[in-house]
Amino acid sequence: MRDLTQGPVHTHLLRLAAPIAIGMMFQTLYVLVDLYFVAKIGDAAIAGVATAGNVQFVIMALSQVLGVGTMALIAQAVGRKDREDANLVFNQSLVLAAVCALATLAIGYSVADVYVAGLAADEATREAGRTYLHGFLPGMALQFALVAMGSALRGTGLAKPGMTVQVLTVVLNALLAPILTAGWLTHRPFGVAGAAWATSIAIAAGVAMITYYFVKLEKYVVFDRTQMRPQPATWKRILRIGLPPGGEFAIMFVYIGLVYWLIRPFGAHAQAGFGVGSRVMQSIFLPAMAVAFAVAPMAGQNFGAGLLHRVRDTFRHAVLIGSAMMFVLTLLCQWRPEVLIRFFTNDAQVIEVGVQFLRIISWNFVAQGIIFTCSGMFQALGNTLPALYSSATRLVLVALPALWLSSQPGFELKQLWYLSVATVTCQALLSFWLLRRELDKRSALVTAAAPA
Figure 1 (tube, rainbow, N blue to C red):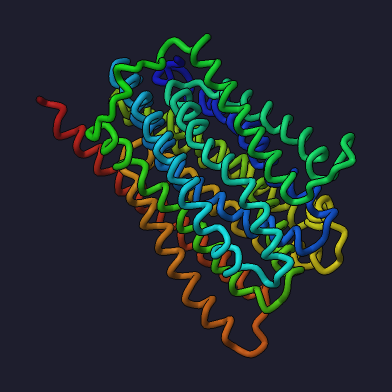
Figure 2: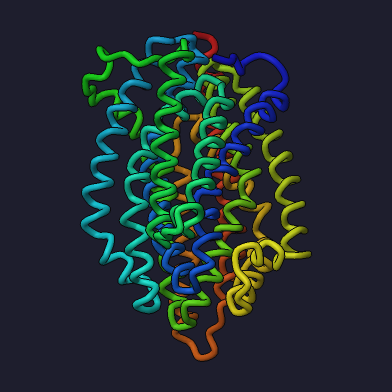
């Protein structure tokens, strides 16, 4: 356990953010590695994997519910020096992880074919999407255990163990992908199915590794069978904080699904270009997301300890660091976006769509970084509803005009990308205002309670 209530705020942020960024970068490489080898098969395979990979947003939404609730409650308990409550939350999160894993497999296999068929542009894309999703689902089910244990460690101020596990699992995935997808060494390529199973096997290995860490090395939060009996009251505490962030990811899933549906008339190359471009964009977001992930335990421990001045300092430092990073990445995407896209495909049409997407969408990188930081602060404060309101507002602002634009003569892809930039800017302003209101409210409560 690391006490984040003492010492320089910016130092703690950077120490937390660095391993988180590395771990998230390697986690994102799961799908990027798959796309790299699948790209050799053709446009339909790329579009199919990108479409099926969008299911990852659903799993991320559900795992976010578990992870955010677990991390926030444990961080606050650490700030209060309440180890018993931290252990209770951790063990109950493992029970919820098992329930979610079973639900993922049951629901996923029952709706996989219908989901892919509804989004894919042609039969070849549908077949590739179905094949990939069937092998991808076991790995997604195991993500819940991985997230629960990793979030518990973040809540105690430790990010390196989770990062190490993520790095090792991606390395394993990178080793398995060419063997199973392209048939390296074995001369028996499994194509899209091989890419999916490489990811699932790697995630299973990651769960085994982090479990070993808890058994052998972790001392603050530990496995305790007596605390694994279902306790609805603790589940309610986790879900109260975690459900709104899960809703944010669900909104992202709806948004991306809407985009895939709107661009179907432009063909598989447009879906492939958007798929590759959006994955590259997610990778570019990692620095700001890492800072936001560091904000949550940092501000959470200080909030639990009643140090609101350090909570505000955490936000100020995080915004400055995140915005500087995202500004540099914006310049990169304005300068040479084709370099990032060509790494995955040589198809001229796919590259054209991906380059246009990155060049336009990069104008909202700084605003998106502010949104991530605000979300991390809401998690730390234990009230994540404002972040959900902000995301829902953005979905409404983008969905209605997008549907109208798509019905007009001369509709172009770039119109969607410009619309996205405008709505993200509005969301950033709304998130900032909501956070200021929440911090002022908490400060007023502390001031009123001071005499007592």
